[in-house]
Picture 1 (cartoon, helix red, strand yellow):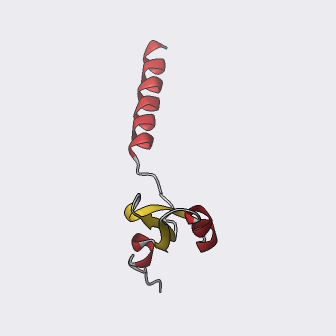
Picture 2 (cartoon, rainbow, N blue to C red):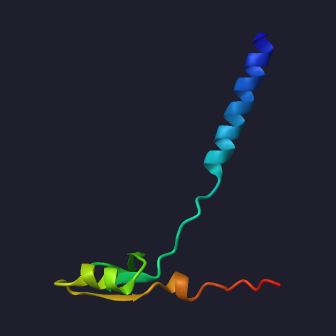
Length: 78
């Protein structure tokens, strides 16, 4: 019985470690807040241009297209 519990705990720990090591699927947002404070590519957490412009309002910042989203490779499906 002790061996069964030990084997179960070992399997559970291996599964936990392997799940934690897998890379997270990050969502690449389309627009970036750019400017003196943000640099390049900037704060890229905006899915719409309006969201980005609302955040940039009243600051020395502007909105640009996220270079990761603009220049990523398109997959061709058959």
